[in-house]
Image 1: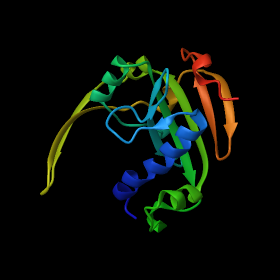
Image 2: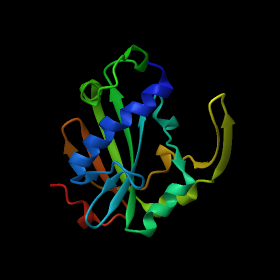
Image 3: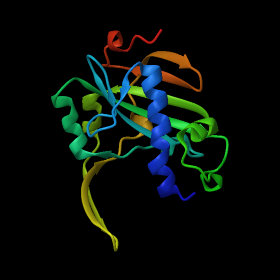
Image 4: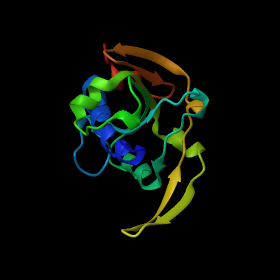
Length: 170
């Protein structure tokens, strides 16, 4: 499978896992990815590259407004697969989940993202044109971890400035 196609189907498996371990609801509509009674979480996952120092995520500027309705947190995560993306031929989220060997998700306070400069990007194909403002948060800028929880196929890390009481996962 090509990387662009893979990046459009793998979030289904990652979001399902995160919703389960964080005890939240996966949001099928526009807005934050996970919904909870007293908080929401916007998820960003990336496949772990060979060099962890190069891990970064991509966020859309309009997503920063999600916090206006209910307290919102970033869930930035990584995952590893037992095969190469180019060898994957399915879009079935359950099968994709079976390829995941490990995940880590870092729950980060909402304003953390603001340290990363916004970048205006645009592009055009025969089918469409786009213009977005993006931010690129980096792994090496994550806040200090306060508490970690272990789950099947992964870890959840609660970082500084995130109220632990909102994410009691024991």
